Amino acid sequence: MRRPLIAGNWKMNLTREESVSLASELCRADSSNTDILICPPYVYLDAVSQAVAGSSINVGSQDAYFEASGAFTGEISVGMLKDIGCQFIILGHSERRHVLGESDLLINKKVHAVLSGDLTPIVCVGETLEEREAGKTLDVIKSQFDGSLAGLTADQIKKTVIAYEPVWAIGTGKTATPEQAQEVHADLRRILAERYNPETSEEVRILYGGSVKPDNTAELMAQADIDGALVGGASLQSDSFIDIINASGVSAG
Ligand code: PEP
Image 1 (tube, rainbow, N blue to C red):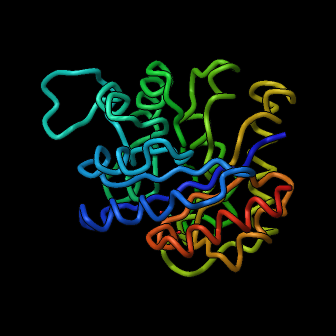
Image 2 (image 1 turned 180 degrees about the vertical axis):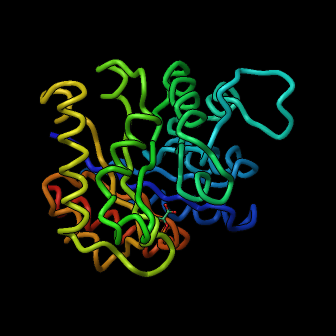
């Protein structure tokens, strides 16, 4: 049985004061049926980690660099993130792929670094609207899967979380229908079974991301292969994020 994970990606939003206050408010969320994760900007990670200390909320970062240390101006290593209490690291988010030009090769190096550091990578894949309309969704997903997750052992893939985030649904208010999302999640599960084996495939958590809101969570989570959500906009307010957590736990139970 895969335990749901609801992850909030705060992106480049909020002040230090707002971050600490949101993190503190989230400590009242019920984590009995759901793992909860928040990913603030790097500069607030330490303060947010302290604000949720002693609660069941996990803290993660929105990226990491693959080298351990050295002359890499502006970058942050996995070890540094571990040092300040991160357990998860989002990698290959579509904004990093499309705005910052990250390749599958770079993302793959980061995935290996995160797993070597004993943290959990959340690896994002997803097609653009143009790719979907050209009927290329499955090809894009397969190619991002094979590129970003190359060289992982079965044990490593089991420790990895995959997030399916159709680019056309991120921050646009356009959610994939539960059926559209489930179709790709089932494809991902099939790819996992082909590249590894059916037993391994059943253990990997696959999150959906793209305009997840309190009122569409239960329907998405009711799909057989959707194990949680990666939430952007709706994770910036405690009420909506807690409503999403509650809706995910109910449907999972
Ligand atoms: C995201 O940031 O990964 C995301 C899915 O954003 P939103 O929920 O705002 O669409």
